[in-house]
Amino acid sequence: GCGGILTAPPGGTVTSPNYPNNYFNGMTCEWTITVAEGRMVLLTIDSFHLENKFDFLTIYDKDGDRITPFKR
Image (cartoon, rainbow, N blue to C red; front, side, top):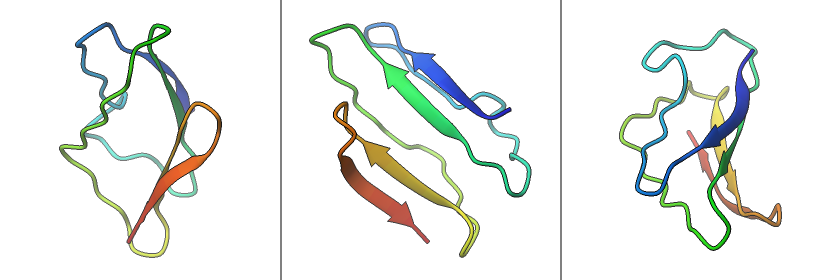
């Protein structure tokens, strides 16, 4: 499967499991990043590849509001 809950320690780094390997075609991956109450998430993307017309990344805040879509 692909997806799950990623928990970052304070000042920690979270990387996608199986990185840098690709996921299978037609797969939907949904990740939830959790931190301690009152903490913030700083999301820095160092390496990211989108397959034209098939892949996308959407980031939501804790209330489920879309922050921004990344599409190619």
